[in-house]
Image (tube, rainbow, N blue to C red):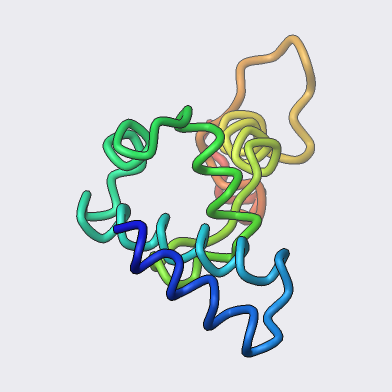
Length: 112
């Protein structure tokens, strides 16, 4: 393995690849491979990589691997806000029971 790594490092140097780019590409490919082998399961992949699942999720976002994994990029804040809106639609008055009716529904159709 050391000979292969030395050969790769020599190729990178000869090609004029900078350190940051080499590390970034290695990290990207390493994470992609482990995610592929774990069928996209981030918890399993994080365990194999020896990092926390949240760290892996952040790296996936930073490396823009979301598209490759077929996932939409969503921050936890957006997710929480979406859940909040589901239960408390716009126009909800605090202290009252939220309606399961869609906020954009016709008010004349409100059950009595």
